[in-house]
Amino acid sequence: MLVTLAMHLSIITHPAEPIFDEKHYVADARSILQGHDTLRPEHPPLGKLLIVSGIFIFGDNPFGWRLFSVIFGTICIILFYLICCQLMMPKIASILATSLLALDSLIFVQASVAMLDVFSLAFMLLSFWLYLKGKYLLSGVAVGLSALAKLSGALALPAILLHWLLARRTRPRQFVPSIFLAPVSFMLLMPLFDFAVSGQFLNPIGRVKTIFSLSGSLTFANTTYEAISRPWDWILRPEIMTYWYDPHYIAAISFTIWALIIPSVLYMVFRAKRGDNAGLFGISWFASTYLLWIPLSIITDRISFVYYFYPTVGAICIGLGLGLSRLIAIWQTRNTGKLRQVAIVAVVVYLLLHVSIFVILSPLSSWWSVPLPA
Image (cartoon, rainbow, N blue to C red; front, top):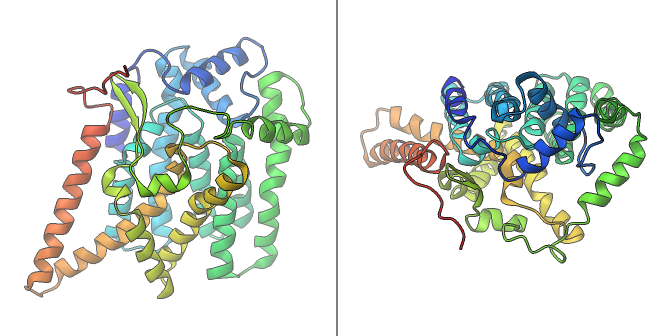
């Protein structure tokens, strides 16, 4: 946590101008601070208000734009580790899973820029942790806050519901109300946050209609942006989005994680069938935050990007942490055969490769830059 926080702070002012979608959100924050209405009505207000808060406190500069993203990105690492512990994963598995998450290129870059996704993920992880602790009502409120940061945060709800149906089915009198509390808290809190944005109490039903109408208007049929991709592309072939060229900000799932998405999912299915709660929760998380995008993409034709996989990386890291810890268990046995040697080499090489890819892809690497487009 401290290492990634230090890395974030070392580059927070570079570049000194808004990059990628920061151009939209920083301009929107300036409009709100100047007493005008939001320029981005297609998004709920909470994430935008957090960017506004950074600029209000620290000034209209790169530090002000991005500091809250860095803070919430750091919180995500803490919450993810707490989730692993709550799932009763072996300690080494929790540490490995969290380390892989923290040093994933997509995770690091999204926490480096003034966009909405990191705020939504932080509240999503909070909802998962609260649910696993049995604090169902608070978990429902956290889901509502995740959706208020970015609407896709609502995908936390089916993950929680699926896991409860498959693994718990306990305290239904507390759990069922929490499911309804998520949309209720979303609808009740949105007018308050909208008031902070515009100075007006807006009809939440009308706002939801506006959000769906505007966000749904961008389809593959009417958009030619080169970085758009379908959900199945994210796991079938490496997808890279360049946010900035020098220093390079690249939105890409680290190859060491991308290459093992399918194997890690299959391993979690295997663990889940044997009664492992961590494997089952990882599968529920993956199904909700990724698999649901496939029918949504087909039905709505709404454009999507590889960074939409950002909330799902944690689920894959759970599977990888479990798998690596199993290899380490083989390594620690007294067996001196070839299997033990293979386990040692596999773990060491994989971790070194993961760190190396992070160093190359992260914006901290100043010795190379992405070639400018022709």
